[in-house]
Image 1 (cartoon, one colour):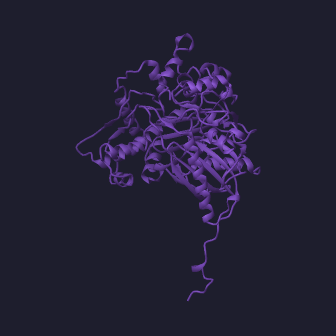
Image 2 (cartoon, rainbow, N blue to C red):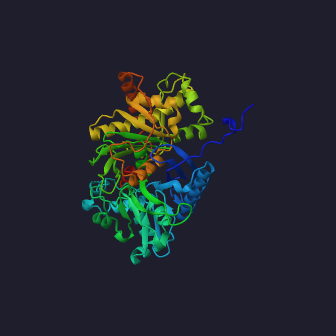
Image 3 (cartoon, rainbow, N blue to C red):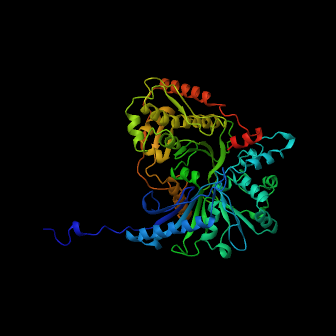
Length: 538
């Protein structure tokens, strides 16, 4: 018979702090995650979906007030869960913020209320604005890279500066507020901070270098708002937030369950994943696999202007006096979304759980190659007239071969970008850090390693974006952390190594390139040259 003090009747030990919180405000959901400070251990979290508004074809908006409400509800929900496992909210010592990038909010300085819905990063209403701006480039060159030396980015509908210009030209309440000096602009991080720290009464108006680097308004070298860029876009400096490093004290939360707790880090979502993966050394790279795939390559303190279709961006700056680290970025538009197409459009699979099982029943793709260029190709091709193709079909081809070819398509697109990064940086990549939903698929990671020819290291946890924000926040208040030391304590990562020969790898890549060639120039675009170039540059 068990005694009253036996293990079977003992309650689980309460979790103890200190803790660090992270707001992760994405395109489709918001989360507040609580980590044990200085580690990658998640104590609890709360997540709520975010609603988007599609007023017209190609438009995507979100209600800034609804975003703020959702974030506050996530904070309250996570704190209740912390208390439920015996933790204390007062042991949360600081929080960080990571956010969807480029999305644009404009609000009134006097009322603190948004003047218009937030224009989300993927909204493409500004294609006509890009065309108008191209007309102003000297010598009628219509060069989408005209501003690259200053901001690192091509002229594109996606970046915040273009969205702001559209709002100035098309929304009278915004243009009038700009003229009066009462308009305030921010990306999502700025809007959240402004409200958390007091809004119209006491709220801070700040952003960090990673988010500012996606506006086309910040000088990539000085890390300050550039008067020449502001003049080009016709925007007043009075609307802009103060640019800070990614890890410093931004302000304190003014009310609610976290009242008095500091906000001490801000990072755009992909840069936060770079930090969360601890790619803090020049030559390291990470890939985040979701609907699409984003790759960032740490170029160190050096700015590398890509000659091979990549974007130059700020990777992070971990402290006001710390050197900024830069990155090259490449994006794959269709990664996990290709499997949604297999499921929803041609009923080849019923759910994502079948993918690995089906692909594992065959030894190879039987020379089937799938280029999922449903809306054109992104980096490094930037061909908006490309369309999806499946090549190499034979009488022996089965649905399993096509599923496996779809996995390989993501891997080949990643190789395309990594090859461009190598050409730009001249530094061979030894390993690739990976995270995101697709990385639960073991076969996929083996294929990725095989087809790029390097080790692939899977993140220990899926929440690397939030982890990066938490790590940077803890570093800002923990003076004992040095740049060369790991920013979080974690165990060894699982490493997947290549299992095929270089000859086999290169032969398969040559056939992928053949499939790419067959996907090009299928769509006869009705856009003008400038519109196509502007869209392609995104």
